[in-house]
Each structure stands twice: as C-alpha cells, then as structure tokens.
Length: 350
Picture 1 (cartoon, one colour):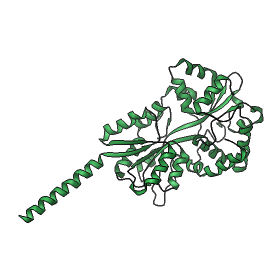
Picture 2: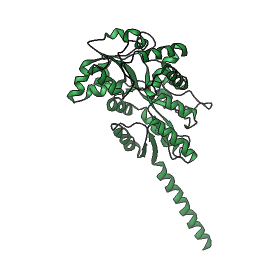
Picture 3: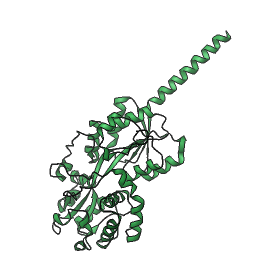
Picture 4: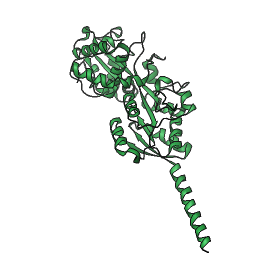
C-alpha cells in the first residue's frame, strides 16, 4: 500500500510537471517598445498560427533596457522588441540578449541589419523593418537638388532654414552615428556645428512637428523618419493632406553612400524561460505575412529577402521604385553613440 501511495504521488508530481511545462510552453513574455495599434494584428496572427499566447509589457527603449538590468536573472522577459539600432546595440553590450542560431533568420535578414555573431556563432539581435531618415522641404522655396545630401543641410546657404528634433533623440543619434561612420569624427563634428548654425529655431517636438513646421513656413527644411510622412500621406484628415501638398521629400545621398535607415529589431532575452517559443516568434517576424504587417500597418519597409511592399505611400515617396539605402553595419552606428553625444555637447546641439 505504501508503495502504491508513492507511485500515485510520483505520477501526480510528474503530471504537474508536464502540465506546468505545457502551460509555460504556450506563453511568451514580450517587452515591446513598439506602440503602434496596427501591431495588434501582428501578435494575433502569431497566436492564431501557433497557439502561443503573448503577454506584453510596453515601455520605451530606454525603459525596457533599464527594467531588464533591474530584473536580472529573475526577469520573465522572453523577447525584446526595440525601435532603434543604438538601443539594440546597447542591450547587446550590456549582455541582456541571448545569441540565437537560426538558419531561417540568417537566410532572411541581411547581414548589415543584424548583430555581429557572438563567439559561439549565435546572433544577439535581428532587424525586422526599416525606416528612412529623409529630408522634407518647402516645394516653393527650396529646390530638391539643394537638399539631396545630408552634408548640404549644414551648408551656410541654408542658414535659418532648418527644423529638427532634439539631437539627443535616438532617431537623430543613429543618423549622426551613421554620418560619423561615413565622414569620420572630425568632419562629422564640423557638420553638426553647421546644422546648429542653420537652425530656424531650437530643436523641439517630434518628427511630425518638423513636417508641419515646413508646411507652415516656420522653416524651409526638416528632417523626419519616413513613416511619419507616410502616415500623413495616407490620412483622411484634410489638414494632413494640406500639409503633404506643401512639402517635397528627398532620400539623401542616392549618388553616394545611400540614405540612412534605422530599424525595429528583436532579440531573445538573456534569461528567457521560453527560448524555443522566443525563437519561433523571431522567425515569424521574418515571414512574408509579418513583414507586410510592418509595411502596411506602420509604413515601414520590410527587410526579409524577397518581400516587396505594396504600400501606396511608400511607393509614392520613392517614385514607385526602391531607394538606395546605406549598407554600413547597424552595429557600427550604435558603437558611435558615446562619441556623437560628446560632439553634440561641444557644438551646442540641444
């Protein structure tokens, strides 16, 4: 009898372990810096296809990095989704990501849009969509050929014409990190000084505000991420359409190194308790259906090889074709961040 009791207890314990593992296997804890309502369909599609429930924690990039550091090995996070290359690089440097090996991901995502492999060959993070850092201009007062390179934004002929958001914002830090990679630190600092000299006003607001400022005549040249302009192009609001009618858009440096692109990317958390599900989610993000959610939902360019967007705003922006994007490693852009912040302080870029 005593032996039978032991067997019953053992079976019950085993069942508990199996059920507990099964329950855990059907969940995924996602820390996301993407606050786009259109992503809800992206997550629902994954759950419908796999049966894996996504528990989401939303914060900004910096908040997520800080939270992971504070939680340490007790963190419940499985997947980290960030919207800036520099922050992905920072998380990698801080040892917050678990390098993964996936032939599917390595075949789908271009090498320039993912982290450098770790010592064991695993890759700490992958980019899944891009947005271009473009120039918008007053179609009446500015000729597109006068703003078709980033370098020209610092030309004295544009004194008092430039609107741009804070230099400390990740989107600008990444652009400036890329320019530093292309020009070298000395020339990049002189360029930043030229931007400051050409400002129509002190940096303020978000990218949409820069577009509106150009349309209103507050300035004649602005810098924005492409998806902010695409949103306005696809808007049903008359006031948005009126703004779009007044501005032109240029993808800088088409004849040289190409337009700067930033990424939204993802990584498996260092202390993930659901690693197989986490990798499955990353692989899903590289699928054509997920890539099209990025493109059609938030007006970002898909990055997986062979996926082409039909988004009308993105096609209109580029004249129906593709644009030349820079190909420097995103990780190199991230590595320039500290240097760039020191330059911004020296030239008085707020």
